[in-house]
Every structure is written in C-alpha cells, then in structure tokens.
Image 1 (cartoon, rainbow, N blue to C red):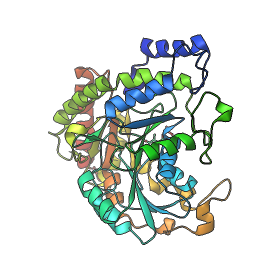
Image 2: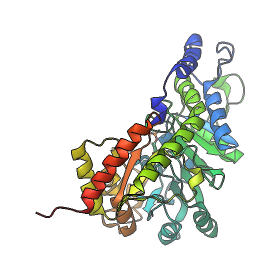
Image 3: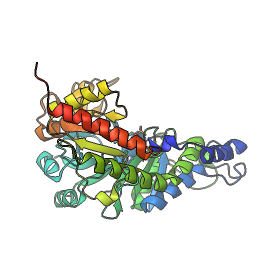
Image 4: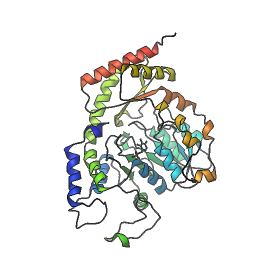
Amino acid sequence: MPGTELFGAEERKEIEDVLSTGVLFRYNHDALRNSHWKAKDFEAEVKKITGAKFAHAMSSGSTAIATALAASGIGTGDEVIVPPFTYVATIEAVLFVGALPVFAEVDETLCLSAEGIKKAITPKTKGVCLVHMCGGMADMDSIMKVVNDHKLILVEDAGQSFASSYKGVYTGLFGKAGSYSFDFFKIATAGEGGVLVTNDEATYKLSDNYSDHGHDHVGEKRGMEQHPIIGMNYRISELHAAVGVAQTRKVPAIKEKNRHNKQFLVNELSKTAGIGFATLPDPSGDSATFLNLLLPDTETAKRTVDEMNKAGVVGFDYWFLNMYHFINQWDHIKELRTASKLPIQVLGAPQDYKNLQLPKTQEVIGRLISFGIKYKWTEEDMKTLASKISECVTKAMKPVHA
Ligand SMILES: *Cc1c(COP(=O)(O)O)cnc(C)c1O
C-alpha cells in the first residue's frame, strides 16, 4: 500500500521531534513539549484534505468508528443497518456499543445500496453504518434520500476511503460522524491510528470526551478537568500521530499517482473479454487505492484466482473467501461467540444470522477480485501485470473440461 511504500525522512523527522522532548502524551505538559503537538497537527492535516470542520485523532479506525456511533447517539438495543462486505471491525464496533447489526445488500459499488438499506428498515432501525469500500464511495444521492426519508442516523466507516469524495463532499462527512483508519494497510499509516470527522460541534465534543475517560480537556490540570460523560481510553500517542502527520501530507501526491496507475491498468484491461470493473458513483472522487475487477460470475472469478496463483501473480484479494472482510466466513459473529456477554446476547439478534438471504451481495462479491495499487510501479511493471491478468482471465473464461 502506498503510505508504507513512502515511509522515510519526513516520518523520522516528526518522530524525532517527539523523542527530543519525551512528551509522548497528546494533552497537557505545555512547558515540556517545545510546542510539538503531533495529534493536533495530524487532525489539522486531515481537516485540510477533507474540509471537515472537526477531526479527532484516536488509537485506531476501530475505536474511531465505535466513538462515531456512540457520539451519534447509537447504543444499546438500537438496530443499525450494516454491510456484509466490510472489514469486520465495523460489525464489532456496532456490537460493542451495544447496538444490533442488521445486514443489508451491497451492489456493484461494493457498498450498501439505497435499495438494500430500504429493505432492511424496521420500526427499530436507528441508523445506518455505511462503509465506503476499497478506496471508492457509496452512491450518496440515493442513500441520503432513504436516510432522510426515514429519519435515520447516518454514520460512515470510511476506514478504507480517506481522501475519496462524492460530488465534492469527502466520505465521512455525509452523516453525523465518520471515521478513517490509518493502520498499516491504508492509503496513509500512523502505524496504528484512526481519525473521526464531523461537521457538528456537539458530536465532536462528545467524541473528544468519550475517547478519553470523559475528560473535557478544559484547563491546565488534567486531574481537575470535568467529566461530562463516562468514557474510555481510545487515545492516540504522539509517536503514532507524528507518523500520521508526515504520511497525511503525502496523501495528495499518493492519490494522484494511484489514480494515474489505476487508469493505466483500466485502459490495458478494458480490452479483455470478461473483465468489468466495480461501479464508482463519482469516478472523479476515487482515491484509487484498489483496482476492483468484476468477472462475469463467481466460478469464472475462482478460476481466475487459480490461474493467477499458478502464474505467480501477487498483490490481489479475493474477498469472497477472505476471513475478515466477508460474512460467509464470519462464523464467530453468526454464532455470537464472545469472551463475555454482549447486549445482543441479552436482547436477541434482530436477524437469523445463520440464514441470511443476501443474493445480490453473494453474486457481486463472488465476482470481485481487487488489486492494491502501488505508488512505485513503473509503466513496465503495470504492462506486465495487466498482460498476466488478461491471460489468466482469458484462460478462466474458457475452462478446460476434463
Ligand atoms: C481498516 C478498517 C477498519 C479498522 O481500522 P483499524 O485502524 O485497523 O482499527 C475499519 N473499517 C474498515 C472499513 C477498514 O477497512
């Protein structure tokens, strides 16, 4: 992934600032820290790119999405519509705030569809946790219509879609709150980290309190601060934030290169029969971290994966069989296997998770093969990759019957 490809002097300089003072904590210690405020700088960089009014850096994308849900007023017993194709953290966050996930259909955008959301609404539905997958974006005009018509709370997990936008609005900023992940696999990394964004001051303040034991962060003395609500420790350290600052500054260049490289591959691959692409509701807002191929059907996709493994093609994901991104492998969730009792085990699941009917999702994800776009690819690298992919798809389209 691009961020990790570009780890270098800029990241080391930011880390060195923190090490030179020893203030690894994001709050207070004004006299000791020599004006270094890396978490604040990280938030400023995220605001600069997204235009968010408020940004709050935290320990991970997972804690950021959990905080976004809680600060948006989603809690115990609330039904929340979620996608069956996402990193499993989305579902965990809904469960851990006490809410009840209701799985709905995704479509060729790889995100929840307006149609899918509408069908999953019940009188108990409080909100939607929309996930913008694979560097792209959901079809926001149609989704916002359903959200507004039914007065639902929208929270966006844009964990994989930092710096992507739809009609000029950045993912994460359509609903009450949104979150980005800066783990090791995203467009930019902090090592571990997440950033919550919102345009609503009250939601921001609640998030700030919630993610630091309720602290209101007013005054100079940490032990004398007020605690308006009960919170937890989801703080980011200054060392992680330092890496996040340097990496986020590189995102505009990464995005431009991603888009160039992705377009090159799309141009090469469009000529091959059988290769289609996931739908981008606003192609101009694509962060282009992934090239998402849609094959004609699941069997052809599986044969393509076999051919690519035989040919030594690397750097792709076949999500349909992935343990962490697709519901077919989430036995632990379907069986609600937990370390200790969660609210859902007391209240009851809103759906029969073991017998979900999601035919559209099965069809789309079965056909999907994604390649992570690399910053440092040369034109030669991309030509070689494209011709290998084409060969594998062509072979898979004409299976040899024994
Ligand atoms: C990566 C990711 C997360 C989790 O982020 P972490 O920083 O690893 O906790 C959440 N949701 C989505 C969609 C992700 O891709």
